[in-house]
Image 1: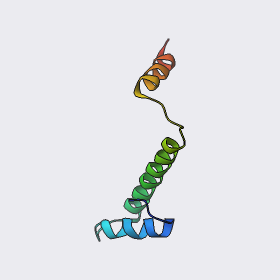
Image 2: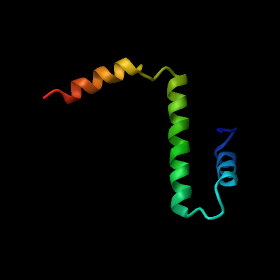
Image 3: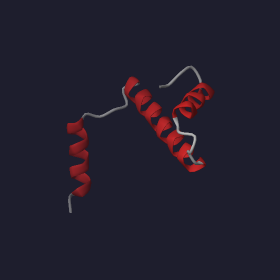
Image 4: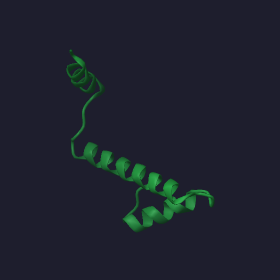
Length: 64
């Protein structure tokens, strides 16, 4: 869904939301869209972990 600029992203998002959407609904969807875009950028820039690496880190955090 990401396009050339933020304004186009918002316009496209609003086109897909129902007319009954509240401001809170719109804010939430914008938040999710931004997080997805950041995640994709992180992956493209090599800032990601495998599932095995994530499990390993989580296991370290959960050790008593």
